[in-house]
Image 1 (tube, rainbow over the protein chains, first blue to last red):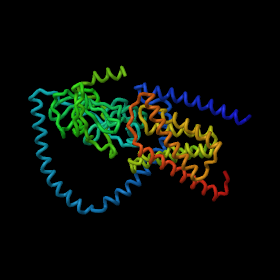
Image 2: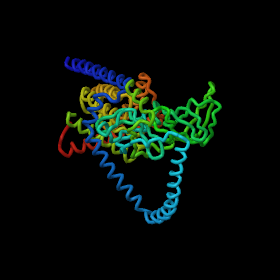
Image 3: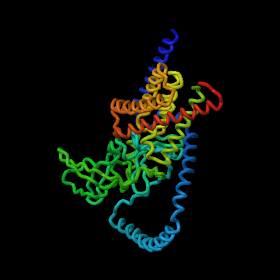
Length: 285
Length: 162
């Protein structure tokens, strides 16, 4: 009975394959070290295909965008020239304000926050419609990227590096259901934790009942988690509900359009002043 | 379905999935190109080749599009390849309606298995709408039919028989 024999062999192969993957899966879920060896090998092996897809899609997008931008470029040029005139005047005023701010900070004896060292990275692949929300960026361990580093973009916080390979890294977005970041309401300084929701939005949780939070308030990173620098935008309060235990659940409209992410910044240096604490955490984890 | 053909199919699927995701990010919600080689191998190859193609396609998806549970898609798609390979050995599904049905059913089973496995691993995941799952299943079915039509034409032109 060769047919039965083949079926039995296939069943054995199936069981072996499933067992191996089950072990890999559980190791990947439990492990905080980043990616497994299989994952690393597979990503290295298929990197040329992804790089090709990236360049081809970049070319196609470029052609479409070029055509779109060509239409109405003259009007926009005139508009931009006018805006430039206004902005250069504003820029002088801001420069003065920065100097004044520096002086006041020194006077108040506040700790001057160092500008974190960061590198720019391009988004290679993005998956925001599956069960997990993540991006892969083209910077890896050779650029100094390692797990736990915060990722930001112009306008707000993006997420956290969860796995770093030689040439690329995986970033878990803030809107992923397994993400969390310490946050505060910019206006009232009420603190809480922003967690990703299963639906792809954000919730501000663990805010005391009597905290002053209003619809439209801007929520930013507080820096208390020792990962994200302080002051990066997370979202705007769009709904407030009160739980039975007295804590408020605040729904946020994310500040960033995560789908439009093309370039991000990976913050390579821990938050100034928190360096020792973070190193200690890294050793544990 | 030869080893070389499987590799090429997987490479093309990865290329399409990455490229499409960069040009039109919302497409990831409805298009799962990495499921097409699994269905194709199930319908046209042996049960064993379908398992291996399923395993490879799933792991590729895990590596480039999933965070936190490496192996979840590999596990699902190995199982799906095995199941479809077994069914296709008994039923003739190598015509367009059969391919369509196979594509739709494998995609639906993939979504159900995803929910089950994430629950088992205690992983939080974004809820997938029923409409979204159905559209993705139909798109997968259509992609399998399209792939079949293209491969049949190429084979016909070169006078090859399956």
